[in-house]
Length: 329
Length: 275
Image (tube, rainbow over all chains, first blue to last red; front, side, top):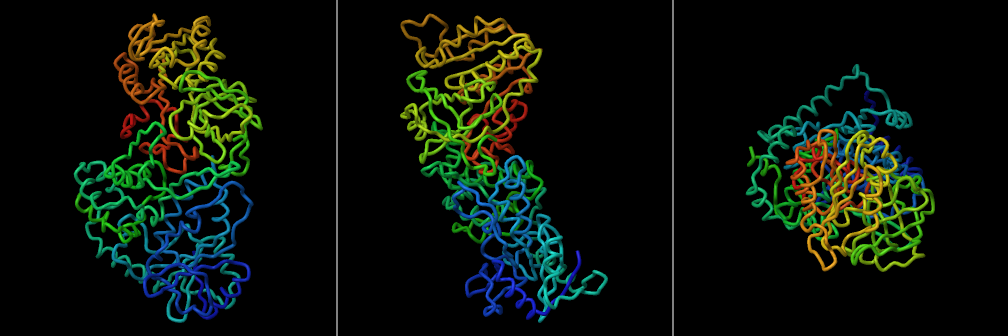
């Protein structure tokens, strides 16, 4: 890893040039939220660098809500996604394990991954429900992304992580190496400040090593209590950077449509004979916790909850998984 | 993966050659795939009706045959209901084979006790073809099969054929008798009371409705089988078959990819395995 820097103006001009050959997405702030939009030089001042998570999880770029997977036509991209928080970057780990599994590689996912350069963004601040560090995820990327970005005044600093990131950085007009022996004191301070903020708002929150045991030990009553406010809308799974369950739907001429599905919806596990292991709402509600904190950690190397907190923000029943875990301690 | 080349979601086409009525609710579909279709016994396929839907089935034919495929289907839900209306000549879709089948190499030198119920005889028939092929390496094969009524028994000629094969024994029982039935009456596990088997040098295979799987396993454990000697063929809602869609998650396992055949030892800690 090493840093380069570029004047913000030059950075945006470089992106403008790249638009000829790339789709470029940046996090844009409006009066309600921050979310990804196509890069537009005229609105460069609205780009929200180094703020916590955009509304949409990164998975949306790789796993569309609905897509026809009948015929595969090769390449996807190239595109550049800028401003990805590390909670989302880390979420890619689990998606990669599932969709790039060498026994059955999903070609649609694989080509989107290959065709996408990921420029992460170090978080300088936190949202109310951010808790990445509680689960061992840093608020800045040092792997899985190609580059990480820090915006300081008129200057953009890029932490080059991958080979592909190095190639990209080499093409930027006006970029220059940062000579501080590879040590970026201001970046380290930024990291420490954000980590301190996170530690402050998440004091006593159980870590990812503890959550699984807590879920397994929890009695029926707590699931009933929290599920009483759940309406099975699936917002938590839709917004989650690692939830990726789907349904294959048949269309004429043996076409298959792959559509986002979720264990929170009634009938998710129902079989033809009518048996349904997740028939009751508390069972479905609990299933998500078992999946994220017990089963996926047993099965996969990558983390299944990166502490982004979006599920808490998205819940119309105001269910907070962090409150639930605090109650389980 | 036959036919799927570079797209894991794409089915291979197969023409329906014959439909065999096995029982009032069960039919066997004889399919001729467009390409050679190779599978291991106990692996499953996703069989689709064009534009309607697909469902997982373990082929009931011999894995030694790769140019035709037999799938035995019980009319249970929406897709299987429409399958039962299909006539020879219809084109169906086949994805797979998926999952981990029976580890038949581990059965070598052993007695194989098979407990089956209802349509669970379908995967077992495929296994029996395989075991017949390797019978020189086996001590004994015992099939205990239960059906609801005598009429609900599938592959009726199979039993006399098995009993004529050296080292093979096959027994039937029914839950509800009729005028012509003169065999034993009761649940399938009852047949286990009278089998002669050297448990220490044996494996047990169970395939059938969940309730039979549960009580069959309990009975086998009572008989002295160890957890790792009992092979269960698990059933879940398997949508993709690829270990991705999440529908068949049972504890940390994707039944479609890590199973559908598990030893009881592997899954006994999973919650609600009999659901």
